[in-house]
Length: 632
Image (cartoon, rainbow, N blue to C red; front, side):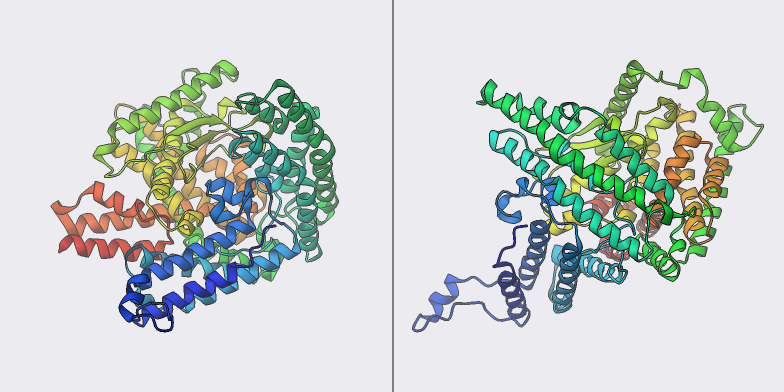
């Protein structure tokens, strides 16, 4: 780890600037005998807002120096994250968690020392966002399991079928690691060489959690072990880490054939001697935890800590104090409303018999709505997704005042991840614009994606959903730390709201089955409220949650099973989609009602998106201020 001795000094310096600016003092050097006029000219006055942004930037730099992987994901400069950060991996053991707790405490104390009334514009919003983030982090760090955070919240489990260094480190190296020079190649190899140390620290952390009685559910352990076996089954030279490396260095100019051959051989050797043994040690540890796992799925299984953790998780994802029971009843109500709308469409299509779920499922079995489950069918599916992206962009300027400059690419989730990966997800573009946004889709079985369901996935994961929100956030010139914070209730709420906007844009005109797919997607998110609270509050079993989801949505059992197992290891997150969508819709309705003919949908969407992701209370206050300003 690279630790700069100047970090603490710079943080104190920024605080001093803020305190002076807040008191209305001119910041000038105190050289003996220097004319006052010259001193003032030599050091311009700094505003309270500028001084606060300096603090926020310092916080970002401190986190990125602790987590060089995060710096690679963002694509920041070495001036921020430290020289050679692309060659290093962060720490994952007990000491790293202690440093995260200490950093959170320091950040929170610094933010509490700021006089909010002295801040303006982006600084004022950033203050509100950071205060919420650090307070949430402090609440999360009260729990002694699942690692620790500088801000926000995380899953109670360090390694699951969905999360952990065994998954994100290979993905980062293959998709985000720079590999355009010989130096880049050495950095890639250096990071691979650190897998042994990283995985041993992960084992230290999960073993400590196990001593506290905190072990992932049995299916999460099985899923993680399965993905490890899948990743390590090829010969070392055929592992994706080695093949991706060999392919990319083939395009590096100036490398001789001998150098390429040597580098390729070193990559395969590192996979064999470092990477595979590290994965084997992690798999053995996970196997040893199985007797502790038990058969229960919800976080309530952790006793009083589990109940408290779930309420914390709900609040961190936008519940605003709503209890597990409140969320459950809200979900049931939304399921009833959306089901009635779907029923009307189905009846108009001449499908009146059976449950909505069974009729929707029957439509999905139609041969004309299926892609062949082979490479040709997968290629056709990907081509259709690209057309859907183009169709939205052709209409977007009538609905959004600002459009993303960065493109979005459609890619298949790697085969070795597809057994436990979600159906689809989005990866943000880099801050410097060198890497596009990526819309990932799981193509293990094309039966999971009947044609009438794909539009809605595209509008959610790509445009005008996640790609619009995250790429515009990256391009908005926000303080770096704002690009590092994530608010699922905002980003996922926006993406679900974007599905509705796509319908308003005409994307489902003359496509009632596509619109049915949109409603089914919203129904799916409403059902998440029910099953998430069912698992973690009402103590439902994994099988109860699967059966309920099947009865409501009509999705395939395999698809529903993957979803339920995701909710089990990520308490509360599944509720954020609907909670965020409902809040954005509520704010839009209020703006339309109060502004009348003066309401401009393009301006409203800009006001939501161009200020970056934020917790729902901050968004609520901001939009209400915007409404009042529009009246004026």
